Length: 85
Image 1 (cartoon, helix red, strand yellow):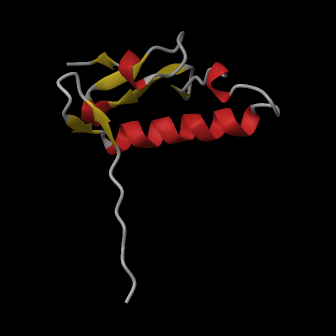
Image 2 (image 1 turned 45 degrees about the vertical axis):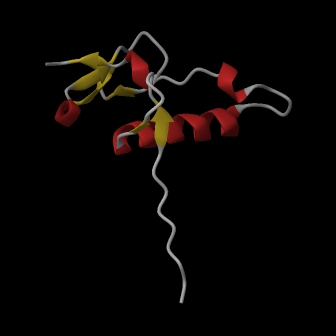
């Protein structure tokens, strides 16, 4: 019998509690990391490589179901999202 391990991403909140990350945040962060690590030369710092996300027609990345968007003139960071509510 094989055991199934389910991983859930979380961060420590300001009060010390663990706050689960949304699947969207986890996905965008992972894509960012994969690109940074894949495009950084040997000995370089992957975190120094900025990644921009945008949509067709040079439009800001938007996740309407979460009412979030990210400015097109700044590198991606989940915390940089703007609320569309």
